[in-house]
Length: 256
Image (cartoon, rainbow, N blue to C red):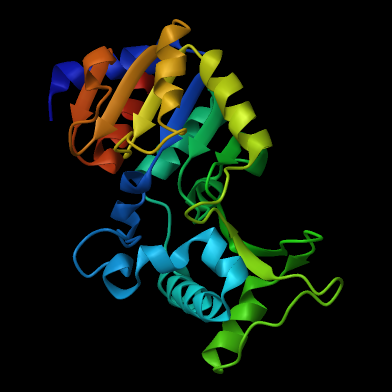
């Protein structure tokens, strides 16, 4: 690991007061969260084309496959714990430096690490919530999981008869406008934008680092592979997010 880069990153953290952290799947793989796109991942077992929002609302067979996908995800994700990267991000909030965590992840590891829910903007929703697509009534994921484990289908909403769906954003479904607007506002007004574990190719989420940079913020990118925004970043560190964030936070605490 490049000591000079880590020391520069630590100085940026120490001198910043309004930090936005943007996270993608790479921040959670160290916790054991499966990578959907890797060999043997979820998309080797399910066809993404069958998981679109349009097919969910129009096809009982597609809904059956969708709920089976979530049965597997709930089973695999239940015991997963935050890793040092999540804990470092939570520490930024404790230090009152964090404006927001903008995340593409749905598994709530930021909240589990200690970030307050109101600080975490989940662009792609939350896998531990279920709601009615018509009246937005909430339902228990645990009860849904138990039904699926028993081989039963998920009933429609008991209040209005609408379809129930996990509160995540499917292919072809619009991002939540209110959360997206808040994320854009936070990104445009921060003094340091840290992107962790994201390929930065999924839009509109990938506009966030550009918004921050154009508004005068410093941009740090931490990822295991190059991203399209490396050329405009103030600092790029390739490697494991947990190790990098833990060491940078340790260095930032020195001589405070």
